[in-house]
Length: 302
Ligand code: MLT
Image 1 (cartoon, rainbow, N blue to C red):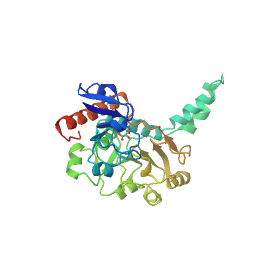
Image 2 (cartoon, protein in one colour):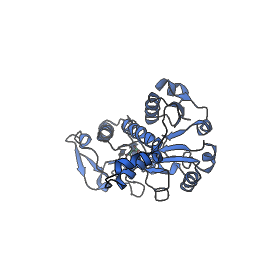
Image 3 (cartoon, rainbow, N blue to C red):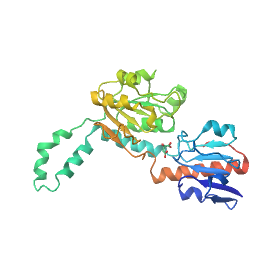
């Protein structure tokens, strides 16, 4: 009998795949395998019984990879399983970043009791005018499962899309999307694009990649979307760039007290992959990976 512990709730459609050879246990310390979403495993002592951890999601920064490797614990994630959910929230918030929809909605709510509200509209709506995304340049940094979906979708909405990814061969990326223009460097994205969306993992080389120096290269009023990880961006530098107008909007999936509430910031409470479809897909992929590993020794991260 394999003992499975869920550190976070994982969709039943995945858990129901476990056969009679598996038992769900409440204790991490008893487990042969662990399913986790966003809780941190860094502080936990890995029990001797533990063979595998499966992250029902893409990022693995909440898992101590080195410690797992030293202890022979195999780590899985679910690349691509929630990519469509993230793609859709990027499209939604990119448009929200171009049109002052929140400003307009808040204004209507603030005067909704006023019997003259309809008359006030004409006088006030110019404050909430926006710009269109058609024809604007979008830089997509990171051309993994999410980046490619985002690039294709926003190209279909008539944006001119530039992609950059140092780790994917140009041929591979361009086979995935013939519509993405190839940026030769990150600097080209920074200098040319009106919108930048980032889809890279948090690593030593991506941590703090958005900082004073990189903001300076960007177009005035650039709009940046971060559905990857908070620490890609230096807090003090984004706040300063927003205050000076260098950055026009910053959409982030990561509530951060140093950045929340600053004018131009749109913060979403880590909703990127919070759709029932994404949660189901991640749970199914994670559970299948664990069973294949525990029963057959197969390590397949897909
Ligand atoms: C991911 O890493 O897959 C996303 O941040 C979504 C999530 O953690 O749920």
